[in-house]
Length: 484
Image (cartoon, rainbow, N blue to C red):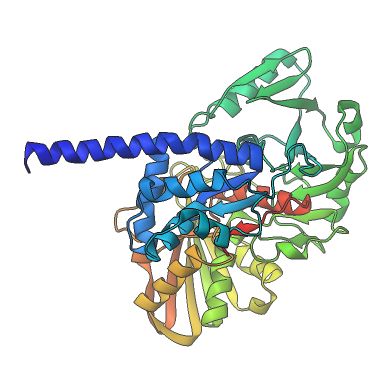
């Protein structure tokens, strides 16, 4: 390769970086002024770095089989800014691919056709809707990740406001707050918090990226009056797992200022177990206590849904290879559960999972068709579900993978199902993935009526993103998604 060729390649990269840098303020303006969330094939462009934007463009070739460059998307974004758009989620990547495939032409005319529902929809000073107060009851692994996601999404038309966290302990408040802030600021799995966190010991608050979060100390819901902190009609997100039935979770609703409760674990009794993307529309105004089911249920249900729709699931077995969790022992010690007393860091631990049975709560058509088991393994995050299925309709690997790839791009399950086709990926590659589950195409087995689908999932962060989506549904925070 000649020196001139090397220079040309580098200059092209620098040109792409420069265009990506110009895209960032356009994305920010659309978000903060117009409440338009710009995405790239389902991946948000809000608050993303230059390199991340370039990587998202590169990723499109794996999904669409065509290259997408920043010079393709920049005119689309620039054109959107000029159209005075109303609130929506707009996939800039899909628009750019559509425009490219039609041979280009007049960008404004193209956008006016594809985005006609929101053109001139921006009203300066107009109502963006009523903000929804949210309280995190418990501030462990899921609680802190929920805080990160909500803080990141604050602003624009999101409307969810993290107002408080509830924790136990009444010792040295200043020291405790510093500890809470440190745990939010630094995470061994998910890395540092993207922003700044300040502690006010006198007011008992944490301020993260301008979001003032009240820290409330209580040993039970009965001790709390949220209205004392100007919190009203709040959704209480219970991350403790202590209460899973209506009677226990109902304690939250007896607090002044609380209106609804969302459990980040499988619910018991008549509580609706919701997998966003599947049965979230069933949440009515009368549903004041809702469960977000489990991370594994969220991971497998969307793929089971699309497979059942296309091929019919006769029966099957779900095996999960799950990262260890905080309820296991670090070293051998007494534990009320079978096998979980043995060291999580040294053993594969065979245990039970209720995910297979829980599937029917979101997909009644699969009632009694699935069995399940789990193996806890010595890694802190990212798990795998193996769906071993008998199908009603025959298929092969190519057809099955192509169908799942299309479902990950152009279906209502785009935010739930991700798709990877690489022989090199391992579990750590999926830390921070925002989808409920990721299909590993290279591992797919399909022969006639038998299929085995391997799915990765970030059992912490991907699940937390699903929880936030349920929060939006419960709070009537909904967005038009374009292009159709």
